[in-house]
Length: 180
Image (cartoon, rainbow, N blue to C red; front, side, top):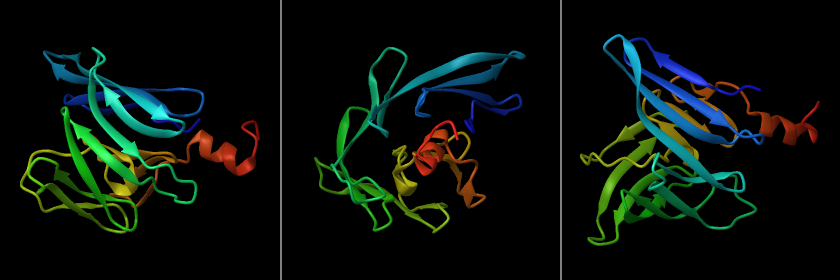
């Protein structure tokens, strides 16, 4: 089904992913290599508005991050209205390609993050802040451990400049039948 179910960096980290029947990524479990075995480090569950991933929560169900999008039927990239990270709301700024390039503090009205993206999705950060929004290139979620961007059409590698594989849901939409 062209889904990434596991990513491992030997003796460093291991990621395990689960999906639903619509190829939406439901969870990511992170394991760390400790004392010659894998130990669960963190769990993350993702939630959606239709096919658009809008946030994640931890194993206890507390929201880690949230992105509210404007309703749109004509844009290939969703327009972000608000982003919440660590229970703090921010105003998102997107470029014309749909990339999240900055978050503005609602309290200070100043940018707290800043990034630019190459056409292939490589990120160039110009902010000294340690705060990083998980959304970036084309509003896909970046897995910081692997550098891959997960979006509606599956996983994208900015380093390779291409998708790893098209997702099952995209293929079924193109053929109008999930069984073809």
